[in-house]
Image (cartoon, rainbow, N blue to C red):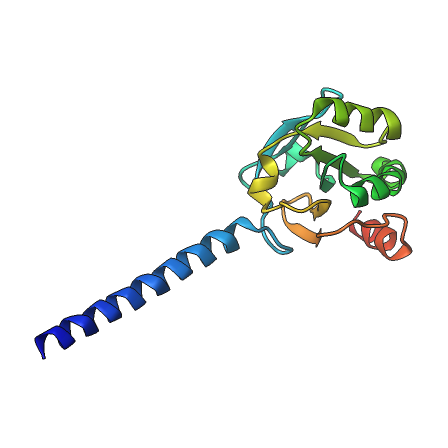
Length: 179
């Protein structure tokens, strides 16, 4: 009788620990994935051309640091075929909407500097580029390409978890409506 009671308490304890573990894992994963409606994680990064792009830590009070511009933040890699395919249309988007207040920043997760530089030499992107190995983790991005459209006040307005044709009229109309 006593052993049965102890076994019952052990089972209850194991169930409680399992529920707590599942909740902890879910919370960790859920909080690290940025979705539309979230505040964009703050960062400061120096692009390859030497300019600094910063999303400040406290919105909207420091929005002037980003000059009130709309940000298209793209995570990519040179070995990623959809990234390669979307690069020309992303360049056209940057060229068309840059003068109207759009900043396109494409952050490569390439560890191979030669592959990264070869990609830039081949495509000559018309947008800001940088290499960084940690920022994608703050956004919960581990599949490429993944792109976030971030408002001047730091809100993620849209997330694309795939390659995008940035020349698609629906996309360009959406971007134009935000500027």
